Length: 417
Ligand SMILES: Cc1cc2nc3c(=O)[nH]c(=O)nc-3n(C[C@H](O)[C@H](O)[C@H](O)COP(=O)(O)OP(=O)(O)OC[C@H]3O[C@@H](n4cnc5c(N)ncnc54)[C@H](O)[C@@H]3O)c2cc1C
Image 1 (cartoon, rainbow, N blue to C red):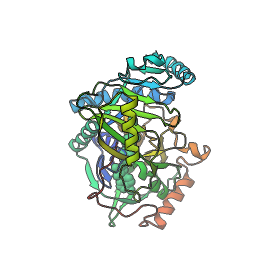
Image 2 (image 1 turned 120 degrees about the vertical axis):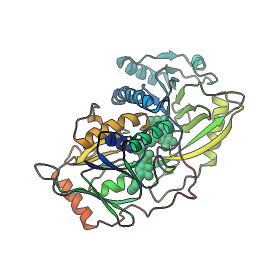
Image 3 (image 1 turned 45 degrees about the vertical axis):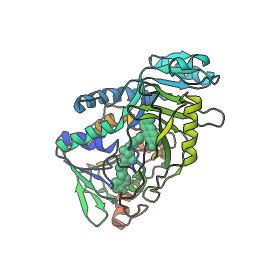
Image 4 (image 1 turned 180 degrees about the vertical axis):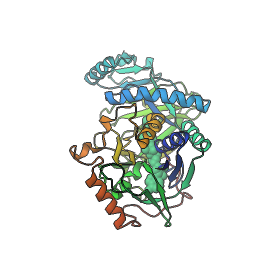
């Protein structure tokens, strides 16, 4: 089949690689290219962790670990590391979390408030205890995406650096996907055609889905991360840290980026982002100073200095769960990464490729259903929605809608997480 994947980030690129390896003719379209600095997927590391208050994500992480192991074998080097995780919170929250971990059979250790430093050397006690689990660490994001790009290229996929300004899906019939091809309109006037589409456009998803008549309440925004390093004190072996909000401080997440330093971020948006309009990725100096101060005073990294500060986009869904499905025949969508999507990147390649082929994936996608924000209504694949979609697209096939004209990467501030 001829497939078009829109978006070459942590979700679209693996899907394109998997589809190409399965023998499909795949065109991967991205406005700026794989893991570009304006995408959500740029940067060297992300956290993976089995421990999660959401059982749906635990199940998926287990499957993702297997997928990352496979990708590591293909890459010839690890795409993730096991360093463990320290999760600090109030006693009552830890009780509930511990119960959830026990139910899921996730090995863990409860640390008393004055023992948090036993698993995270330097972490200054603040009266709250923590949970340590060994099943966590950094995902090596760049290594992972490089391996996926190699797979894609070796399998003969075609990469197009282009801005998609409109998409069209044929009106479905009772019997099948409807007459005619799916169409992807590029800035500049070119139109690509395919038997099926995968839309994995990160913060750019809403605008494209709108063109298909699909309404998903997503909120893209910008976050900032900072790497700190201290030549006298390597941080490569430290576990991940999630220090849940305390006092005025929002939740803090942190992980090692081996060879670079320790990466910290606050779970607090810098500002909302509108894809294609808000391309400014200038770091906020006050946020940088706050994170450095936290590293020095709370993590015992007294000699730490800032190595880099990057601003990166992510896209929240209303309930913090992903939005994945086939809302129209031949149209597979994955969006609403909610700042947690990278640990599922390798798995997502398999899931999206299965969906694009019309095969039921091994992952239970019920919690991530596409139509859950529309009161369980017609959204997913109904003829009415598709017809509306197609009509909307045909009525204004070259309209930019909410999409802005493409801008060149040249001169764009370096970005990301
Ligand atoms: C600061 C920060 C910290 C994070 N921490 C973690 C973590 O610890 N653990 C974790 O698992 N995840 C984490 N994440 C989230 C993770 O990085 C994302 O979930 C993941 O990268 C999402 O990938 P994506 O492919 O959906 O989106 P993206 O990477 O944004 O890819 C979408 C692509 O689509 C392209 N595109 C969009 N619109 C168009 C268009 N109209 N035409 C052509 N191309 C288009 C873009 O150029 C982009 O390359 C974090 C994210 C940030 C920003």
